[in-house]
Amino acid sequence: MVYKTKPSGWRRILDEQFLSVFLSIGLLLGILFLMAWQTTSERENAQQRAIDSTGFAITTYSGNLASILIKADNAALMAAREAVIVPYYDLERQLSTMIKDDNNLAGYILFDASGKVAHEFTFFEHASRNLPIEEILARHRDAWIEPAFRPSKDLGMKPGYFAVERGIWSPDGTFLGVIMVLLAIENPYEDTPLERFLAGSKMRVATLNTDNLLAEAQSSYGGETKWFTARQEDAFWNLTTGTSEIDTGGVALFGDFVMARQNLDGLPITIFMQVPVEGFMDNYYATRQTAFIAALVVIAVTLFLILQIRIDRKAKHKNELKRLELDKRLQFSLDSTGQGLWDWDFTKDAGYYSDNLYRLMELHHGEVCLTFDSFKDRIHPDDRKQFDAAITEHIKGDKPAFEVEARMHVGSEDQWNWFSHSGSVIEWDRDHAPKRMIGLVKNIHHQKLKRIDLEFKAQHDPLTGLLNRAAFEDHARRTHALTLRTDMPYCMIMLDIDHFKRVNDTYGHDCGDIVLKRICEITSRALRFEEEKLLFRLGGEEFVILLPQNNCTAGAALAERIRKNVCAEPIFAEGHLIDVTISAGVAAYRDNELPQDTLKRADWALYQAKNLGRDRIHCAPALIDVDLAQQHTLSTVAN
Image (cartoon, rainbow, N blue to C red):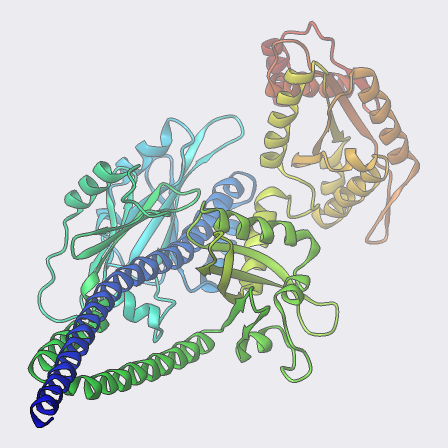
């Protein structure tokens, strides 16, 4: 019995030891596998975070830079157009006021066709004689070109400054000079996480011909970073463009760097960015070190496994608390920069809207609880379709993030403000449907209104509010294209106030301005709604009405109706009763004729009406020669 009992005890001990060893080895292998998987996953997550952060950073930086450059180009374009129709001192006053009111605009230089500086206004001293004036004039002298952007080194300025150039042309095609608008690129992300992110990257702004406008290389990760040169950068993108290695939006992982490229919409400028992946690998290094130590401890002492698991859980919990703390700091940074954050889980139909977002919307957090649907309902009906389209493009994979400008209802009253919306889906379900989405909201109402005002001034006459010559040329091209497609003619009516110089000489220019405005009002009332949109002031007392899908007979009838209305309404201006009449020339499109040729024939018909006694309508015959009409018009003006 004792003999049989003892082996049973040893067998039981051996079995227990074997079971313990087996469980220990199994637990060891499981932990080692878990640690290896976690280390690999952390590396992949770090790389993905680097790609996502870089994409978001370059998109944000590009949007801000594009808005500054487009604003400067709009100012240059407006100056180039108004330099033809307004005196220089008025243009100087407008540009100087605009530059003083805008932090990004640093000045302007106006060259005439001979290369002489006609006028300049800058906030810093520079040597105008050192500018390559002949090269600047040569870029614009032969033809109208797209805006030319120049770096500070080409202009004798300190780094951080750009210049945008636009040629100035008269209506008859004469080159008058060049307007150069100077701008300073400021950092709008000061004291924000994005600024710290950009401080550890290399940024390069280049034109399409690879001229570097701006090149900045910084590194906050310690040591010396071996950045790729501009030539290496260009070679990389030439080799990898169109391959599967490129993420949507031009972001790719290449070795120890995340490479990003972004073209500015509507501008011949590309932004390149290099970001070291090392800055995102802290959690990966910590996880890898933890895994190595854990493996050594488990191999040395099996009993230490339980303690090691507990330590690992505490470490994970501690890391989670750190991540939560970082999230709070990030939220504080976003709020301090005037941005609102929202995070919506579609599966749970619940989410988070930051306090600053409620403040931007002028809502009380305790009284109103926003949802994704109620948030969208506050978007203006005219902008909701564009907002939905931007999110749809992002969900389909056409864009790495959505970004759109839309008006939103602010407060409880009928008030609408412009906001910029951006964000992306961060979680997807198995059917590749959005599960969780995060977005940012920022109030851009004042900037948007300024941009709309600039666009309005570029297309409208400042005295009468009518569309100007630039707008007429654009509408004429569109109408001409419609005629070529539909074979329906169009008609032009050219109006002129009879003896308008006599009005200015007799009553003064202030009365003359009142007469011009009243003639515009009388003419507008005689037009139908669709015709009113096509009334233009070419300059002085000359006006043009463009009538799509109408012939000369219809144009003459409309011109006669306007003439009678003007004769029937005497104009009161500063206590004077002024009788005014108008003359009009009408011309309809004929085959193989450009819009400017039709305008010349209408101008010829106008002067025929004046030569026949004024206060009448004259139609240009279809067979009149365009060159002859133009010569006749010029001789009439000269006489």
